[in-house]
Length: 215
Image 1 (tube, rainbow, N blue to C red):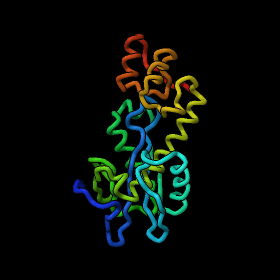
Image 2 (image 1 turned 120 degrees about the vertical axis):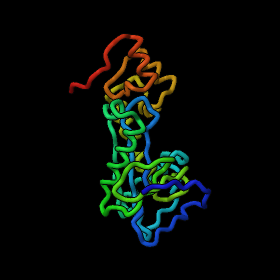
Image 3 (image 1 turned 135 degrees about the vertical axis):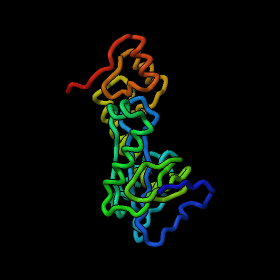
Image 4 (image 1 turned 90 degrees about the vertical axis):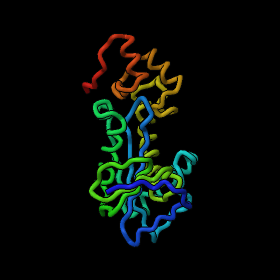
């Protein structure tokens, strides 16, 4: 069973009378490179975390601080992901749903209910609700957005060392002008999503096969 919450509500006012409720969010649907990363978090009401908000609206320093605090204080948390090969095979929407399923499945204890940022829910073992702009309205979703973003950002910084010249540490794989120009100059790498139009167009223009990671 799933339903959608659309009415404006004051921040973090959802009440579920003792049920274990997970917040779920994703990062990385729009980039041309790297995985889509999701997180699921069940907060502990006895260990409040101050300053939770949409991860995109806070500084990197604050995200990093809250990242550690969330992992320390949450009742449960888990990371899910879909790799580039899965994104190209499934499409980014379905890959995001699969990554969310993996994150929720990784929670222990398992949640009774899940609040999903956005306008649709993956199929889960528990009930679920989609919450529009949930990362700025629901504390558990905000916590999930922070875990997902810091996890993916750190990975993109590491990938920048393996694939220098693309600027991954800066734009984190998003389709900036500099990133597209680097693709045109340096070519497509195994971490680029060949199903995404800017990458696909470069491949088609060069009339070459999509690269495969043979490592």
